[in-house]
Amino acid sequence: MSGGRGWGPVPPLVAGIVIALAVGLAALPLPVALPPRLASLPLPEMATAILLALALPNRGRAAALARWGLAGGLLLALVWRLADAGMAGAFARPFDPLTDLPLLRSGVDLLRGSVGAGPAAGAVAGAVLALGLVAAAMVWALRRLAGRGPRRVVLPLAMLAVLWTAAALWLPALPGHAPLTRLALDRAARLERGLQDRRDFARAAAADAWAGRAGALDRLGGADLIVVFVESYGRNSLEAPLYAATHRATLAAAEPGLARAGLAMRSGWLTSPIAGGQSWLAHATLAAGLKIDTQGRYGALLAAPGRTLWHIAAGAGRPTLAVAPAITLPWPEGPRLGFGQVLAAADLDYRGAAFNWVTMPDQFTLARLGQALDRAGGPRAVEVALISSHAPWVPVPRPVPWPAVGNGEIFTPMTEGAPSPEQVWADPDSVRAQYRQAIDYSLRIVFDYAAQPRRRPALLLVLGDHPPAPFVAQAEGRDVPAHLVGPPDLVALAADWGWTNGLIPATSAPSLPMEAFRDRLLGTYTSQGGTIASDDEER
Image 1 (tube, one colour):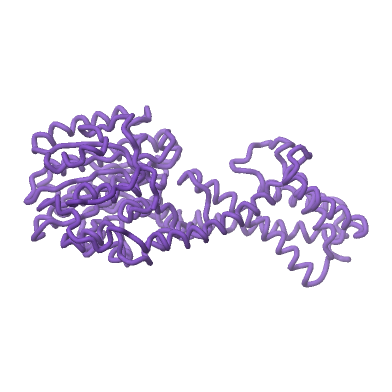
Image 2 (image 1 turned 60 degrees about the vertical axis):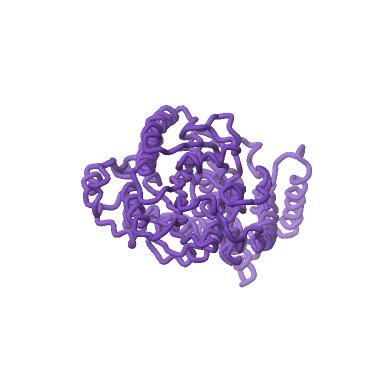
């Protein structure tokens, strides 16, 4: 065999080290502790990979396919580990290949908006090149080891290594362990559970006691219903030491202005289905009254017959509107979610400079909302997705007098001279400081907007969509604050919700799953609203 015997003893040794490192990196949880402890190394799997490489023939198509298959499997495991680590850091959950692949595009778009097209393309190319080099090194190592040992010795040893790997799954006291094999079995089981979850959710989404119900939300009378999502606004904002003093003071300062405007306030907690990102899943959860924590469930909801809060409002004669400054591409989901009108970024006609990924400041978005509602002939049901508190949280806008908002050009100077996202994100403390300022800005603006005079009364629900990524949140959990603001007679109807008077919810106040809130809202603001879902019920 000619596959490398002339190289002497060093290349096979190096090849064995390459394979062992590849198996170890693919198997170890990330981040990898260096140097790793011997007990943490996947010794059975390392031995299996090296012995199988030695047992493979040096030539032939079957041998080449086996080498590429082994290298591809190890590369897939490594990529999956990296994806798990990335999703855990960003969204506090593992990677799901059934639903998370579209997030790659969203991540690239966010990176491009934060650091620019050139650096983003360089980062993507660098990642692809690094993975390609790992695959090439694996194939080279397997080729160098092929046929190096006597098969009558190597094959029995390889079989023993396979048995060792299998035994390590069931006998914890046995030396060594098999995390790669366990990972493969776990992921296969997770894929099956994910497919079954899609089927179960599709059946649940097709049935809704409120769908087609006449007279929904009639207790609102002539008032608008406005649901305002504040991006990345979590319970951490009011309870984590890094943020609580700032944000509680802002909420406390907003209360007198709302009271002078003749408005009442109650606040509580909802539990978001997500953390760190994918805001649209939280929006859909509240609208549908079903827990939507994966893209697969979101797709099943879109395929189901009309059953969201917005469908129900429209069916009761209340036109629906989505104000979505983050939407810069076609959004066919809007009508499927029940929105009769969508004001996306282009429709809002902002003429100022973008704030990196953030297309426009929240104050401009709310000013355009006010204009749209003033033009409306009657009460509407509206969802607003604010984005000034979306990562990368730089630069942070400043409030301006409402009459000065105009076409948005007044905000352009605020983008000049600000630190770049690269500068901010080089230091975790700087990231957290920017997050604190961005949330504070959004809270100031949204409650100042709530206190502005308007043509028709409005019941506002202001809530967070999800907490930020764990390293920013500095707190556990997925609770978000929720604030009900409006005319006293309408807010009084929610007296039995257990929410706290004012804008600062009591720490001891109950936390309702976000998927249960839709039916609570409909039951409260519809005459003879019927049964309200229990706090822990998930239909």
